[in-house]
Image (cartoon, rainbow over all chains, first blue to last red; front, top):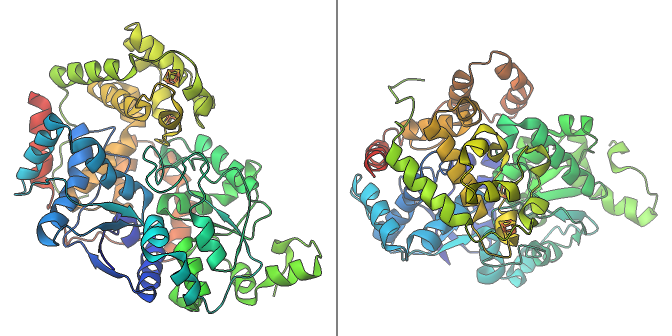
Length: 307
Length: 189
Ligand code: SF4
Ligand code: SF4
């Protein structure tokens, strides 16, 4: 299995642990990720409010490179916003003659054009449908038995285009988590919006969403995400969220959790880069404190346990 | 920030008109069921709810919508788009309102659109978003000295985790020609 890898800007910046863990875990699963040469920003959610053309041309440029220079292989994008932006080109530009023409006109300024032949896939889609959970299960050396994991999907991986899961009640992370030996935490906030970029300009509004999501996961050991923006919003603002009535919950990338279960260890998975991974939380994860707690059914507060 | 960047994309009445027509088209089939408003996680902060916005557009009351800042509270979560029984592309409509507000040159657009503008400027210069210089540019645009202070705790946290980086210059200028082309096309469209 070989994919054109589109890390996206965040994965080289504040979300390096996502990039590192995705690469390591995919390699372990026998997947080859080839970074798209000279890829550029997809526009995130900032292009649409500024320029309709750039909103499509920015992601289209990257697909054009894959089409021309990488033989048009499938693209894997771990970031939800990148994934949606790239996917949008195929869904909204290709097939609309006028828009496609305009986008190619913009691309022509840098000597490119995109015909529309590159498939865009999200990490979860690849894990479920190309790799398969059976293979994931085979790689597990250090299962997460007893860990209660709240799968957080966020907005853009399934909305508005539900390619591989039900956007109203997503479940695609569950087979992966079960393969890792974890318990899936049942909650209603898995597809709730984290506030996205409102965190920058209208923080009060976004904090309210974050506090509700964290409260929804109050009995989970950890929330897992598949998007650097979700990850940032859910973990970087927990102090403010607590003031708004939320609780603290550790937040990890799915790929980091997979890496831990594959026996990579916390250094390789860069747990120290996560903002919610305090020494106490890392020890809990290392010592599998949750399972001991569950066995004794002590009902103690997890956060109250110090090594 | 180095390099000379255009402060704004020049407003053009043609683009304004075509965006407006597109917007009207997008919501003309709205039957006022209110599902969008009920689905919106940020609706509580909006002075004009999504359902009302679509009605006002149908009635040609765009000015009143643009006077409000409601659509800037849209976080592009696509819940309304997912649930609208008429299948309307409401998140795109929110995006179109943001663009119209910019073209209007309103104060609200300057303030609420500052982050998006800073982001695009940053991408135009570096080819990829560079978080540290992006935030600096955002602060410059907002011209509010208290604002950077409110980000200091986060900045310290990120710095402690080794997450702040000086700009990567490998793709610098890569998108310049495309930005110029799009700007030219959108002005004369
Ligand atoms: S959900 Fe759709 S049809 Fe219903 S009010 Fe909103 S836009 Fe109109
Ligand atoms: S896309 Fe925007 S308007 Fe629609 S539900 Fe989400 S935040 Fe509300």
